[in-house]
Length: 402
Image 1 (cartoon, helix red, strand yellow):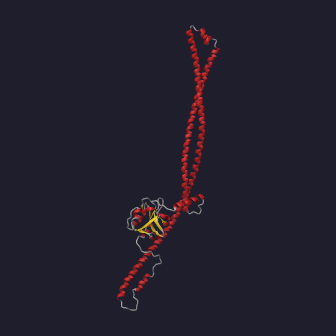
Image 2 (cartoon, helix red, strand yellow; image 1 turned 45 degrees about the vertical axis):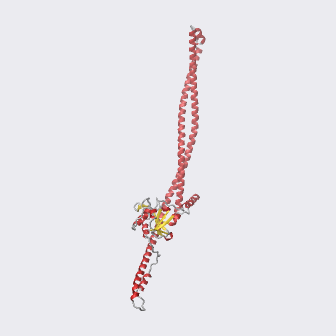
Image 3 (cartoon, helix red, strand yellow; image 1 turned 30 degrees about the horizontal axis):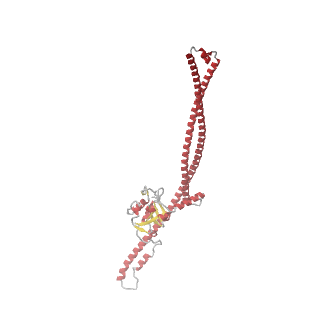
């Protein structure tokens, strides 16, 4: 069950202010712990945010690296194709050059146009030989043009790939620097978080030791106070019983004794019985079960356990109350709101040890032990302890006496 405290917000404001000011020297161990916990939460939030940014930067870096590798491979392919195209262009140009050189150096006029005309046996033969010559020339030209076009195409592709590679190399460098920058910030925040968490652990140990000592003092004081109150009640009951006995003994004596100047012998014992009353506070008699407060003190330090109702495993708030009152023969439900419906209401000014006190819209209950204090099982991570009613501020709902 949660514990709401109206002073928590104001306390956090003070702690944060002290933390920002960097001065916690005058703070109590508990306040130092809270301040460090606030700082740890703030740094953890920064770490989580930087983690998200770092993951995004790493993915962007991975994308830039992937694109860079793709471009590098494409550039290798384009350059290989360019080399092939350039070789084919050179071969085609060499072939045409060789043909032209052969024609120039040839002494046979049969390969020239005039030779073809003069050497033809007929007009048809002449046209066929001219077409063949033109076809060879056209083929040579086409081969050269194709080789040149392929070379130019692959040259442009290789140039584009090289330009893309340059751009993506720059982009990859930027992504890499961003990744390193965020990674460095994340590393620094993680180191800070580890340091703060280490301080929190140390302060928690110190606070636990201080709280244990404080609870021991409160327990000793509560036990002494409850014992004194029990003695006072016993003395009051004994005095009342003695008065009743004295009155019972006095009535028949004054009725039958003859009138004499001597004082009745029964008056003196009654007087001596009342006189030596012990010098302890007198508690007004009233209903309730004050012994429940003494029983509750036995379970200080038992861990909180949600749904727990045994010292062997742990208690939650209503489970502790149920277990304590079961030892007095009183069966209670394991539910604070249902417990509030039992017994009679008690004004806060009239609280007595053993009364049940309720908080947080009936979400929490404890056993009053006097002196403005009560025993309860607070929350997960805590133990059964003594706490002042004032610590719960306006969350106090009311009290019941069983």
